[in-house]
Length: 314
Image (tube, rainbow, N blue to C red; front, side, top):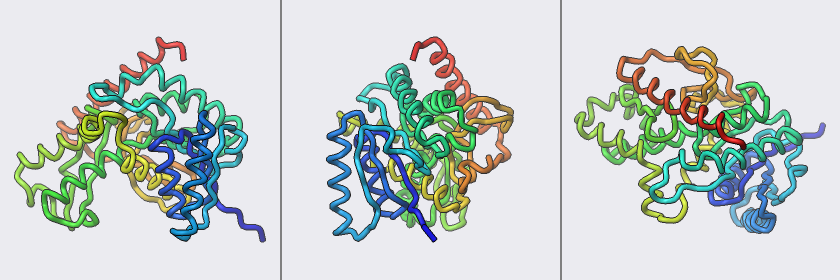
């Protein structure tokens, strides 16, 4: 019986992409191919990481390339290619440049890895997931945006810090677009099963929510060159792991809605079950008026970006 290792392709060998490769290899999720138009960067980072296998004792093989042929038969493709944000830039400022880049990546994926599940990380996330799905022509189950896992991780980290609890005992998530219109859901946040509202005053919860919303911008401002990469890459790999191992984890992801929450044809952050087929179910939940209004506002912002894309030649 031949048993083949899973194959993970990561497109873009910058900080986010190379750190995705690092987490995926360390977890031994499969062999990793790092692809970048700068072949030297892809090969150099891949070789460096491959040499760490002897220290960290993982058997994943890591290779670098600039040729899409090398991603053939990948089970998962994580797309991180694109320009990062600079201080003062919103994710939306990256729209036209990154749309061209993501489209080019997806043409390569469509040709060489037509059965893969594609996870989009490039910004502005919700619009880039839309570009990817249009270009790939894959069913919605196999084109998923990474946003909510990261936003939820930021939220839960700050909750753990504020309550003096282990982050392992904090459950919480965010819905909506990735950026200023995201909708953190403190009503569904629990610390060891205890509702957050019983542990912290509302003013403190509001402060944590706001910090989660601007979590990426806070890092961009501190770094001054480049943007976050440890938490974004860990988040993308958590999604990949749930799919590769058919874990059926329920994670907040950007998914093309098909009538859920009364929306259609837009990528919006919702809770979804991720398993062997990709996005296996949108977990629709009852929202109160404030949360519903937040989600509508978020959808409006995504819709504007998609309309702006329609006017661009990319």
